[in-house]
Image (cartoon, rainbow, N blue to C red; front, side, top):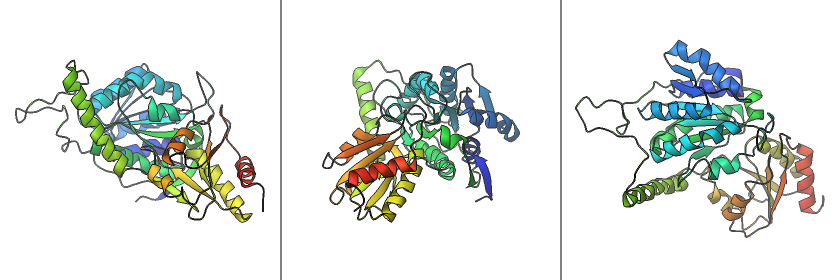
Length: 354
C-alpha cells in the first residue's frame, strides 16, 4: 500500500482507477463530477493512457463500449442527467457482456435539478439503467477511502462476471477531502480476456462483440444464461456493514453519505439507552437481503434513511419479507439530513427516551 494522503473524493476516484489498471477514460464535464475528468486529463497522457472528452455523454459511453470490447479496462464518470443520456449505451454494454466502470456522482433532481448532493438515482442504478433485461453491480461507498477500495473491486467483479459495474457516489463524497491510502498500482492485463475483440493473429476464431440478435430463441437463451450469472452475483457478492445490530430493536438502513449521518445518530441514541443499530448496504445491486434477514427476528422496526423521497424502502421491505414495519426519513433536492433529524426520528419511533 502507498502512503496516506489527503485527497478530494473525485480525484481519489481517478487515481484509484489508474491504480486498478484503467488506461482509457472517456467522459464529458458535468457538476459535481467534473474533477474526475479534469484529473484524468492530466494524468492519462503521462502514463501512456487515453483521455478523451467526448462531444456528449452519449458519445462517451459508446467510446467506453468500443475500448472495453477490446479487453482493456475502460471507464467513464458523470452525474445524474449524464447517466440518463448514457442509458442506451449501458444497455448495449450489458447486452454485449462487456465489463466497464461507470461512476455516478449524484446531484439533486429530477430534470436539471441542482448540483448539491443527492441519492435520488437509486431507482436508476438498481432498476432502470437502460432497456431490456439486465443488471449492473452497483457499489455505494460512504467514505473517500472506501470509494478508492471499491473502484478496484468494481473493475475486478466486472471482469469476473463480464458485467458493467457502477460506483454510486454523490456530490458530498465527490467534493469532500479525506485521508486515503491508495493501493499499489496494477499493470493493465488484457491477455486473460479470451472473449475480447483484440486481434486473433490467425490463432483462434474471431471474437464478435455485439448485442444485436434477431433470432428469438437464441436471444432468449442468451438472456437466460446471463441471468444465471446474475444469480451467482446475488449469491456471492452481497455486501453490507452491520453496526450494533445484534440486540437492536430499531435498525436504521442507510447507504453512502446518509449512512455517515445515521451512524452518528445511532451513537447518540445508544448513549441515551435506545437499542438501535445500523445496516449500511455497500452493494445496492445485489441488495444485501441476507444481512437484513439475519435481524428480522429480534428487530421490531426498520428505519430507512436516504437523501431522496424513499427509493430504497421497497428493497428493505422485500428483504425482510414485510415481516416488520419500515419507517422512512429523508431529505431531497440536495438537502443533507442532520444527525439531530435522524436522532429525533429514532427517538420518535422508540416512543421517547425511556
